[in-house]
Image 1 (cartoon, rainbow, N blue to C red):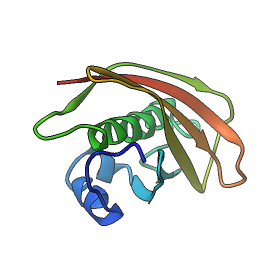
Image 2: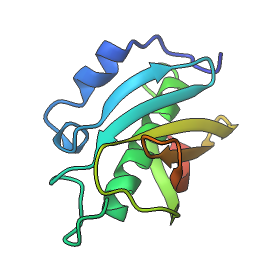
Image 3: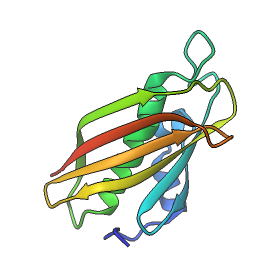
Image 4: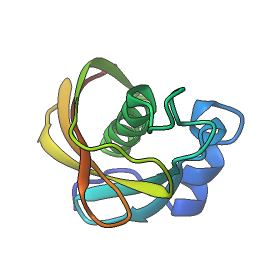
Length: 136
């Protein structure tokens, strides 16, 4: 297990209330030994004007997963801040729910790199993203 903090799905989802994470409907669904998962609806909050999942909403899901995963790998008063994120949008989604799966590429004392893959309900990859964080 890579996590150094104790966490539950209930606690992670409670942190989402009253901020962007809750606003777009992100729900943490699984804490694995070395990965973190969350879902996000494709609805009026997350679609762009042409009816497709907004690329920025995919990035919000990716950065949320990577930042929370990074925090779970920290100790004490340490926090995690994003340094760089990129995203390749590979397939569109118009409805339903997308699922993000976050895995560590590198977890160091000062920097972390996270790989986040976002898929539709049929398991087709919609977006792949990489987030680099700093531990402060």
